[in-house]
Length: 117
Length: 111
Image (cartoon, rainbow over all chains, first blue to last red; front, top):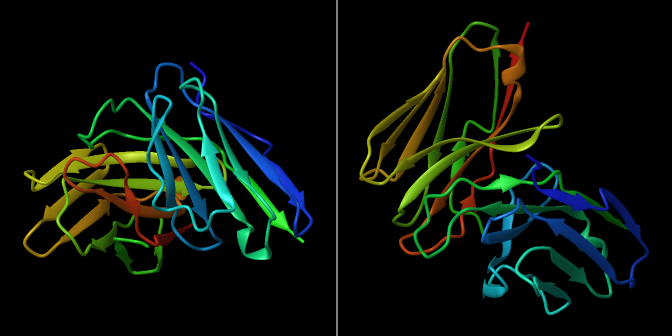
């Protein structure tokens, strides 16, 4: 079946522009996660949804970052007034986890590479 | 912030040799997972080990977990060129679905 998809795959934004990154999780996956990955580093947790509820946004670096999943499937990560330090790969993952139990494999999308000039 | 720290940061070995990577973490965990990332297939789950388990096998992979030392190791036996990738450990805490990744070990298999 289809895996996690993300769009666009590449995005170049001028400093100060707003961007929106989309994630389509695997059908039926309740949990959805966003990560930011800088070059040569591991993915850093940004935020997490269970269905449409945003349960943890402790990793969002500033109030310029906003994520939503209004119908419990597709999610959008929005970055307002982009800065050069926002340049990174943004990864989305989904899992079958339905509660606070952990221990579920996460399925990752290919990522969106954001470059802010 | 990153919970796990992999060691070594980079490793180059000959094809056919075994590769061992280690992960140390700071706080108590519920589960520990290993993921692989390469340019071709992105980030892929390899194996999960629960905090009450000490060792787990999957094909050529062997993972150990020592909760008293807050450390885990990943052994890849009979390495192949296709094993060239970055390997990350990721942990989750009790009653928390989010996972926290380490910085990764970059493994290069030499022909």
